[in-house]
Length: 237
Image (cartoon, rainbow, N blue to C red):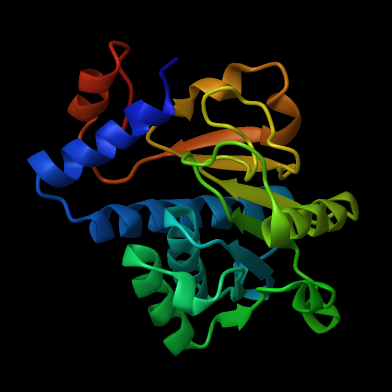
């Protein structure tokens, strides 16, 4: 099985953007679209609910993982799901593709703020408690310890999870180190992890299994030759 390090994941992205000319926005769109289809599969197969009757909350951070979350929310909305993208970082703090996709989701009417502790006290909305929560807070670039508001969001999400709500992590559970599989303090406890390009080396850690749940690998629209260049074991991008 192919597993990639943080550096190898970044190199796949770099090669796709710089050598092949695939815009970063296209990679994010492909990643988010494929992850949204995986969430739809979870709704049908695990939650056993028609997506048109489902309620999904997407927790969006401030980096590329958050950008993926906004794309996921849009695709779920287009599929008929009742979805809310919760912005866990203020719009003024966003940049790049994350900012672009936040604006799109906001114009559609999908975004609600969740950027401070007072707002977090009222999540989830009792008027539309979710059957699935999508974790798009922190991605493969995370290292160290989770601090501040994001730690609070993770703790709250885990409390909701323990009440029976299914949690789907995007790329890896937020708070888990991509290379070691060790949590940086708080970490999302997922039922399903939809990871991009390939599994990450940290997934093999004995500790990581508690947080990952079932792992699904989806592509970002780049050719398999890129993963073969950064890793000698063949896989699918």
